[in-house]
Amino acid sequence: MKTKLRFTCGLALLGAAATAASQSSVSSLFNPSRSDSRNQFNGKLWLAVFVGCAMLLLDARLAQGMSYDTSTTTVSGSPNPSTSGQTVTFNATVTRTTTHSGTGTPAGTVTFLEGATTLGTGTLSGSGLVAITTFSTNGLSGGSHTITASYAYNSSIQLNSSSGTCTQTVNSTLNVTTIAISGSPNPSVTNQSVTFTATVTHSGGTATPSGNVVFRDGATALSTNALSGSGANATAVFDTSALAIGSHTIAAEYAGDSNFSGRTNSVVQTVAGAPQVQTRGASFGVQANQFGFNITGTSGLVIAVDACTNLSNPVWSPVGTNTLTGGSSYFSDPQWTNYPGRFYRLRSP
Figure 1 (tube, rainbow, N blue to C red):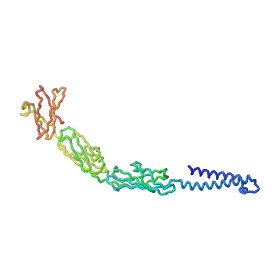
Figure 2 (figure 1 turned 60 degrees about the vertical axis):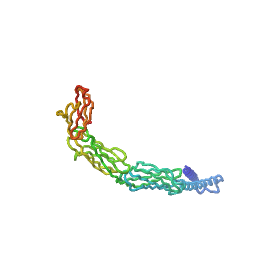
Figure 3 (figure 1 turned 135 degrees about the vertical axis):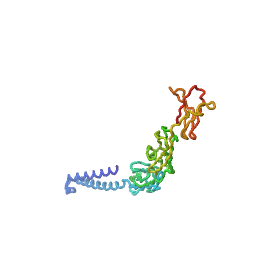
Figure 4 (figure 1 turned 180 degrees about the vertical axis):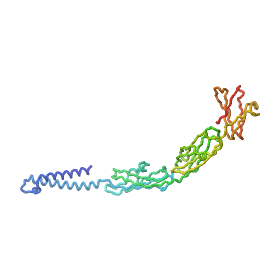
């Protein structure tokens, strides 16, 4: 504001001098025939010209002295290159490159950006004409990243803004160590819903595997499901009741992402026909004062048995659970004497 005021005053004085000069011929400025008052006016006019020029020269010097000093900002990342999930520390250095306005140490904050996205900030600290700050992150994905360190002008120390950039290379070297898949229940029976769960796990870093898992039955794609999770583990889940009777090799294929390589694993899912109740033979009926019967089917099947007393308006109650061993299992109802008649059904638990 002071600089602007002095320029204005100097220009005003010169303007006044020029206006006065236009109203009087130059040859008459110091004409002895003029009255003393006229000579006094001419002397004041030349004084105004002199003062105006002097103020303009002074203002130019003041303007140079009052402008903010320039600065430079540099930034570097360490380590570079880095790997996905690894912590990278960016170091920013702000240097005062001119000292017209002072010799103060750069102060304030530096903003670290990738493109228009702010990653973080750091507070400068230093001595002399140099100050530094740091910012750390482990969230950079695989690939090349242009990181900018931006220093805003600081009026309190009369220092202009500046910025610098560096290229940070992040290598995707963390591999998925396992992809596990399981089906539940296994074995299952025809038309029964089976849940397949694929779990993707890595061995290092802090990033979480992302992307999709494709579930296949042989060469046939059954479903594509997104991974979700945190830390080292992420899972994808797929349900189906459409598997036919027989043996199915269900594969889970993970294609990988910018941080992790892909993996594939599989599980054999057995789908059996519906279990059967053997209503003939010595095993059917009352045995050792308990009513029971044999259930046959695929070994390993878990069968739940429910009972009710009225098929017109059935209210089913669980009465037992059997696992088929060697293709069969014997079921007995310890409560059969409490009912004059009872109906049974088999189901998966």
